[in-house]
Image (cartoon, rainbow, N blue to C red; front, side):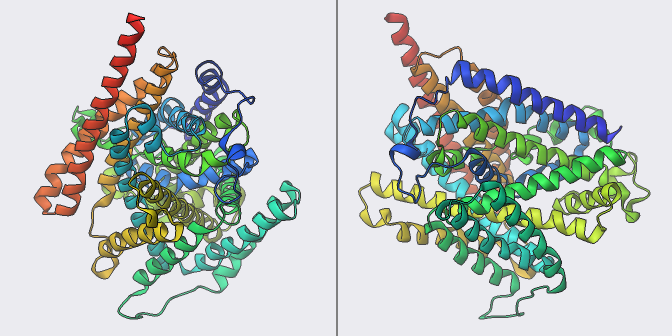
Length: 563
C-alpha cells in the first residue's frame, strides 16, 4: 500500500467535509448569520470576553483542543492495523468531530458563551445540567492531571526542548502586546513570532536543561509537575489575549508548518506502508479486541468531548462574527484530523525508514511494532529527513516540540475551563468564595495536581491507568453534547436537521458506554477503587442525562403534534 494513496484519500475527504458538508449544516441547519451579535461583543470585558480575528481564534481553539491526544491515540490504535484507525479518523473528522465542535460552539454562542453544562441546564433542566457539569469537571480533571504528567515526562526525557518550549511563553506574551496594544500587522507579528520560536530550537539543543535529582523529596519528574501547575495557575487568571490566545495561535501556526513539511515529504518520498491493514486475529473475525476499544482509544482526531468544553468555555467568548463558528469549529476539527492522519502515516510507514526497522514488514508488524507517541516523532522525523533533507535530529526534535507545546496549551486551557466550572458552581449554589477567580483556580489546580502527583508512581512510571477511563468518559461527554444540541434544534423547530447530530450521538454513545462498562470489571479486578468509583459515577450520570433529554424530546414532539 502506498502512503500517498492514504494521504490523498484522507485530504479529499477533509475537503468534502469543509467545502460541502459543513457549509450545508452551517447554512441550512444552524442558519449562521452575522446579523446576530455574539457574546464577545455584547459581554466584552477584555479578560474572558473579547472579539478575536478568526485566524487567531482558530489557532487558539485548534491547539487548545489538540494536545497530545490526536498523536497518542492513533499511534496506539495502529497496533490493530492501519485500516480501522484510518477509517475512523477520516470518517470521524468529517461526520463526527467537525459537526460536534461546530454545533457545540454554535450552542454556546447562542447562549451568552455559557458552558455546555449551563446550556444543558437551560434546555433540558437545571438538575440535569448540573449532572452534565460533573462529567465535564471529571474530564477536565483527567485531562489536566494526565497532560501534566505527559509534559513532565517529555521534559525529563528531552531536556533539549525546555528552552524553546518555555521560550514560547515569552514569545506569546510579546505577540499579545503587539496584536492588541500596539495594533501591529498580524502577518508581520506571526512571521516574527514563528521565526523566533524556531530560532530557540538550536539553542535548546546546545543548552539542555536538567533539574536537580532531588528537591524536598521531589525527583525531576515531580518537580516538573509542580512547576507546570504553578505556571498553569498563573496563566489561568491572566487576560485571555495576554498569553493563552497568542500562545495557542503561534503553536497552531508552527503545527501547520510541521504538517506541511510532513505532507510534502510524504508526497516526495512515498514511504511504503509496512503495517498490515488488519492484524491476523481481526481478519479471522475476532473483532472483540477492537470494538469498542478503537473508539475510545482514538478520541481526539475523530471526536472528543473535550472539544465541546473548549468550544463552550474559552472559544465561544471570543467569536467576533457568528459565521466564524464554522471556520473555527469545523476547520479546527479538520486540523486535528489532519494531525491524526499524519501520525498514522508516520507510524505505519515513516518508522520503516529508520535503520533499526529495516526488516519491518506486514508479517512481522505485530511482533516488532510498539505503539506510542515516540513513533510519531521518530517516523515523522525520518520522512521529513528523507523528503526535504532536514537533519534527522532536528526533524525529530521539531515533532517532539510539537507534542510538548500542544500538550501544554491544552493544559493551559484546561485549568482555565476548570476555573469556569467552579465559578459557575459557586454562582449556582450561592457560594460566593468559589466565584472568585483566584480561589476557583487554586481549587482546580489543587485537585489536578493531587491526581497527577499520585499517579506518577515509583521510578516515574504512571501507575494509574487513567487513559482508558479518560477515553470512555471523553466520548460519553461528546455524545451528551450532541444530545443537548439535538434538543436545542428540535426546540427551534429543526427536528429533521437534528439528525446530523443524533446519528453520530447514537453511535458514539453506544461505543463509549460499552467501553466504560468493560472498564468497570478491569478496575475492580485491579482493586483500583478510585477509578472504579469515577467510572460508576460517570455511567450513572450518563443514564440520567440521556433519559432526561429523551423525555424532553418526547415532550416537545408531543406538544408539536397536539398543536
